[in-house]
Image (cartoon, rainbow over all chains, first blue to last red):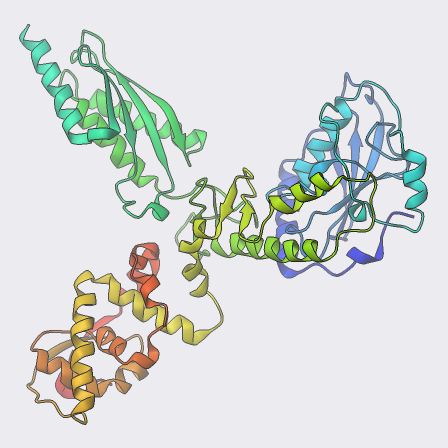
Length: 161
Length: 349
């Protein structure tokens, strides 16, 4: 469904390739705590295993993130979604889309996969209740044609979680 | 007490050396704050670090060395902060029981000057900004004047261009897919954040303008594939390598004009001339002008003469006048090595 929307499947530019290779090497040397990159030969799509942080409501739970890189990464943000089943969280839709500003409007090319992962884990860790966003059903229905979360116009209204 | 007077005089000396960069908090026992900038950075675009240090002595000074600590710094990571301080403290230990305030301040400035380059990787491509071994060639880097964050010039300009294009596209089509309806005010905010002539620093998000990276534009040009542009730039660079050559260039421009008016005829006398060998074809083309050099009766370099042939001069020379030579030390050095002595009699080959 949401996995590979056609719009971002252009091959990586040379600049994007170089940057991703650099990130991959750095990840191998120094991976963010709680994350595991599943090795594939596809530089353009990373599958990353997330372990809920100990002491949070997601402790001992494991989820999978799918990170797709656009042609002009890092000028453009990557598309980051949870592969369903996605964690129950007030900012994570059941189709895996994540409402997190740095993935969209607040993206900066100085961010890395590693820094995104840390932000997502921090978002998970600060949640106190396991629940879906209030507009989950409406949103997921709207996305049934396989729309990317990057085409969504997000409204970031909650800075607590 | 004689010694107290001496110490106070030393503090006065520090004050007079560093002027406004020095704030005396106590003259006895000496306690002062010093704002230090690298000595090598007289063009602000070439200043990558700065620091404020505190020096506080006890009444036992100078028998006991003063306490030195860091108040604030820019462009220095923790490792370099520590190194700077330990350098100054080492200096204090080298000078037991001496009046050392001025020496310590000097040490601080010297050490900071040696650190006047960005550290670590470019935040955009993640490759090092400064080569570690001097062997591998690195891309030119620059700082944003607004916040001191450093990038490869190419990388930050790519980001700037990307923002400008994105901004245009945003203005054209307001996305139809809307999760939550925004009101008109929000919409304005979003477009206002990245106006045509603004960008955000990728590291700190501080707004920057074209003027904050202008000084890096010609650095990128020198790596562009446009060979012609590259050649003319090198020449201009050479001219400004020697400050007096700009004056000479003007002189020769006048002479060249005269020469053109006289169908190239200007009296000559034999003279040894220093010519650069970088651009043999250009030197050759300007052989007419070598006669102009002779007339002047001075030793002269071909670059200046070349520059007087206006066809190869870039139209933007006015921009370069503002201190380009300092911005590209590597290039300058490279070309200095290529100066060769030539006998004028042999012609400009």
